[in-house]
Image (tube, rainbow, N blue to C red; front, side):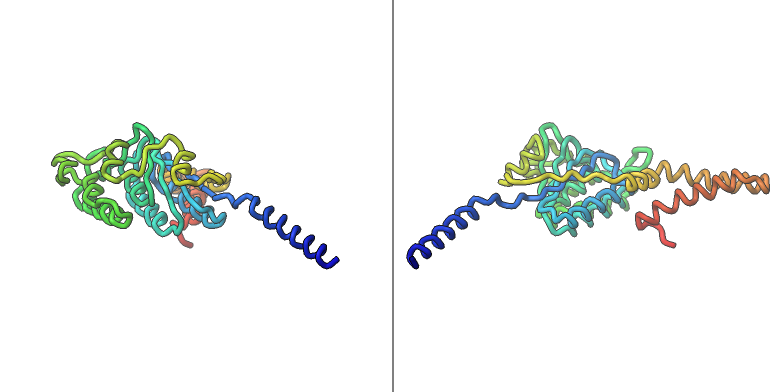
Length: 280
């Protein structure tokens, strides 16, 4: 009787062990965020919220889907700082262009992947009229590019050559030109891990097979805030604030001008306060 009980218990344990061995392993969490527009305060807020979401959901990997011609240097630098402070791997998929500030953000990521026909580089700082900014701005951009490249074990001379047309980099770059790499060139000079066609291919190359993708998007309230911190909309609100005050002084007692000015003031300040760019 005792032997039969022992056999039964042994059989039950064996069944449980087999069952445990067949249990599916936990899926890797992959969060994807898009940088497919101009780099400005709206993009900075989006990246902050995306990486906060990645922390909250305990994402194992973050992939940046990149296609941008650049934007504001100060906002790009803040994005770089956020990316480099993030504790989990961040990979970028350049799905066409990573120019100027986009190149800087890409270099800040742990790994770079590019689609066929994509490009990275041309990071010279320009003013609103398209002309190159004074050298003090170029010097600042060169230093950021160098330090970011060094941090991620990439050749800092190449990063600097994406900014400074005067720099000569061995056989890679001649004086009078800035570096812009194609996918093939970026792979050759270690500024790209591989040519890929999709995010799924990046995961496959890194032997990540059991995964779930979480594509981060802003909620309705965040979209509204992003709309009002658009530099064009902010400028328009400032004009309404000043115009309302002017017309109130010209025609004292009129309700509409001062009401419009106060409403514009609220719409201007509240999104910046929520974004951490304005205080009480």
